Image 1 (cartoon, rainbow, N blue to C red):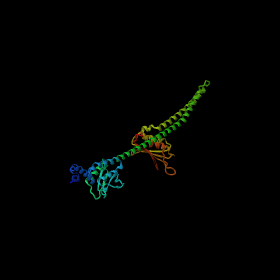
Image 2: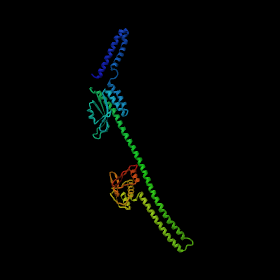
Image 3: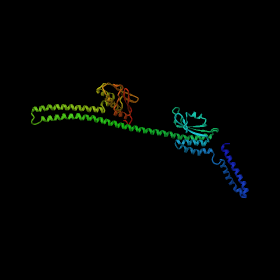
Image 4: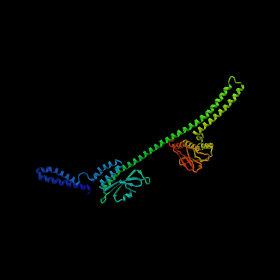
Length: 418
């Protein structure tokens, strides 16, 4: 007979005995009214006896499927601090000496007390574990075998007593709530990691914007300085030559001037105009150099190698240009490397030979500048800070070693850099 049947038989026996005693006692004490009132007294006596011996109310199986279930749901609605509550539900519901919730943590399992075991087999071999139930996440498959990912393990210990089918059923019920909890914890951790990554990207983007702003400001100052140099000296010389020509012409056209004066004035005017033409051509050449520094036509039409060939041909020192790129790069990449290379070549002191090597590998376009050794030993690699900021703003960098430096940019720029 089952436990539930024995319990029902015991309850019925207690009620029958109590009612019989009440009827007999009622007849002796109350006479004719005894049989009428005795059954009610017997039922009350039976209820008191059942409550005293623990047979009143639902059995433990009913408790496990209702009150314990509600306790599990309430425990799992919290955070990681709810895990001890789940362990408490297991311990009370199974009358175990101890119960624990072991969380999967990378290369092992960690209990609530901080104890770590290597794997599930090691946990099952412990003498204090009489039953273990894994909590699996079927939404996340193990990359190796396609099996559900192990999230946690529920364990109970009942030394000297058997683990019943009801105990196993309760542990299985609790595992469902535990699965919801640990999956929620995992999703929350993933969300926090993503939020942290977004914040990091936002900081990187803001720093990139600041570097771009500094690079633009440096370029503006450079262009302003070059234009000021052009306008201050060359425009003044051009204006003097034109003013001299105008003054001579005015003298030659004076009413008291004779033919000789007019002829001399014409010769002087031609001379001053020739000087003005030279000044104007020099001014135009300087403007062409400035325009070429902003974005050379050869860089636009023929690419980085051809533009650097034009630059090194005009340098007062020998520069050997080696290496080729397999094709054209994005305009921002070619322009960034070009300006950084030109500024670096101009900043290297002395007149010793240099070597510039172009390359493309690992999604990066590079310009390596091999610098001459200093007289005291070692090298003196340098790149202007503004150009380094420009490269950093575009997602690249300057790598310095003992033999020189390497300027590089990614071939595919981020939308922010573009």
